[in-house]
Length: 156
Image (cartoon, rainbow, N blue to C red):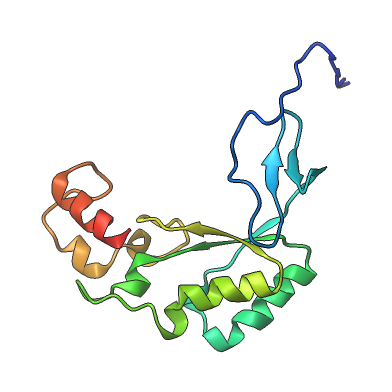
């Protein structure tokens, strides 16, 4: 048998973290020591993952609407490096890699975005999302060595 004890001795904290204030729509996400808050009211968000660069941009809006209909508030997505820099030094942020368009579609439908920029991606991406050309470099990946950090900073 399990029991839950609600001990009033635990202090209540609020306004102890600075979360950035209101966005341009007047919404505010904050927290206290008991709950996450949206516009001052307790909020239990639901997050779903969608890797937009894996799909056709013409399908993004339909997929986002399916997510919203299913109760999702926040769309998490990886920026899978290998999709954006297939050839060393050639970045592509157009077509199916148009981050701005994707984020604006999310905003249009009232969905928050959690952008997971990597550089490593645990989204079942080949090489963990690292471009093939990076694996051919003579440097240890996912490490604090200067050569790897040069490429990771450039990606950022």
